Length: 151
Image (cartoon, rainbow, N blue to C red; front, side):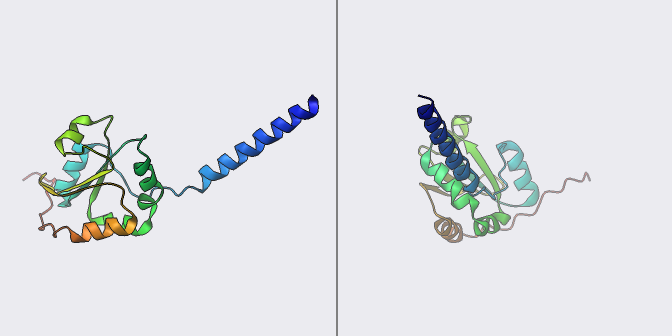
């Protein structure tokens, strides 16, 4: 009986080690996500940058795949330097999901600093697909950064 208990404990310990190693090996996201749409919109207007909205949810497997792959790619992080990236949880912000037509997720929406929708894409994108999509979107006209100084 004691031998069986030791065997079970050994198997459980080995299983815990495998899970811990698996979690530790997962790539970390490198995108500097903003989570507050209003603050990000203000930042975009001040900087004259478009916003990239990523509508997702914790239960969405393709969204989680993008976390582990696309959003963990340093090349994608470099490509997004000219954008204000905003991650929006559709469960916490169904109003924003509705406003931007995110009926299915993952859903990406690119908007200019004034709030005009430039492009949208549904479905999981690899790093290369995302970079191609961003490149295919017409160049956003330069919008001067908003001054924070008072006249």
